[in-house]
Length: 137
Image 1: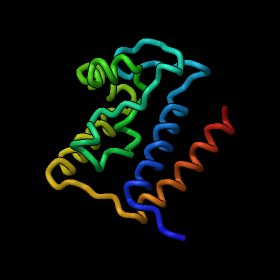
Image 2: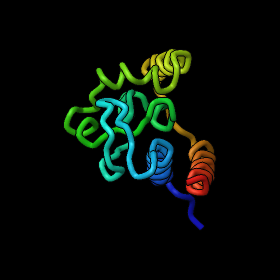
Image 3: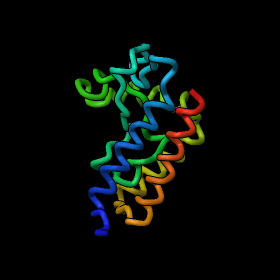
């Protein structure tokens, strides 16, 4: 059997990670947008990143960097980052927010490339996390 390519593994993991974020931040059939704070139906939820994955690849699968965000804030307001920034420390705590900023600075300076082993490990981890969240729901 041929091994999956790194881009293929990353795509699979991105789908799983986004599903995990949506399940984690869902409350019944609705969620509170990290940016605008509005309560919206789950069908309007995106997994919105504070630090963009294009510039901060190492934070692509960081749970502190990604939260339930409404499609309007994520898509039409390009992340609505000013409000996201105001609400993020409240959501994850100041210490974790400071740690996230340090990691972002490191990744911005040094870049990051996921290894095959790391992607495969994260895929297994998120399959299990999703199972646990579904079981608890």
